[in-house]
Image (cartoon, rainbow, N blue to C red; front, side, top):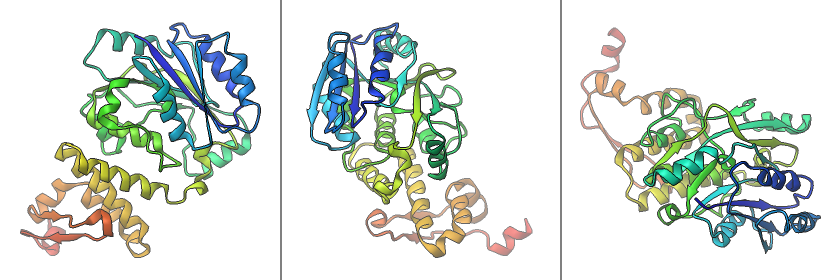
Length: 329
């Protein structure tokens, strides 16, 4: 199994060396390392050059275009059978490809493998910014237990009893699957990776590799993209809208569509000042259709142009019980 490691790098001269050393030290060596110099103005180019004789390294130079575009450029240049990713301020542990290579080599029906991520905080300021940005303090990122690939979209949509997620540093995917899903969305400055992982889970067979111990380390510091949400204040809205467009254009199971629409609807309600006060109540009902069926009788939700105009029309077909009857039960 020939694995290409793709590293986007923008002004990463202080951390890129450690990332490349971590690739160099792998027990299972990758086929190649593709570093995309995304318009850096520091000494990133010199760091890349210093590793040319140490790694099967390919350098792609481009004007600054962001993480998604840089990863896409790396994918375009990569020649391996499978692609893995590493951010320039993160690094791999020695066991990064141990399970991935075996699974992808011996189980041809598997499209990709995800693993657990460790997290380290380089600076107190970076840690504070990370927490103030709304993230929970954690030193380990994983999916709680092995789930069937058919359940993975529900886990990633946070609509499953199993909790967790995985990181861009910890997934290895066959290059052929991107014909089904497309590449990273370049309109997104934030969360472009989770956007792609959800698309992969909806169209491909993605399985767990090592979810009990980390295979890579994310470095949290002052300049992490994820802690600077001001770079794209409408990032969540763009994430939902673009994903909704993609889902509507693709053959996705109705079960997944329904869950996604509930999540999108919940997001829309939370953006409205008046609805925000009622969002816990609304979310409960939208996420618990069995409750509605039991007390109200089944009713049809008609989404007329919901995602273009932020309007919802509900067609109530039948109501078996009134609110007073519910309170009495």
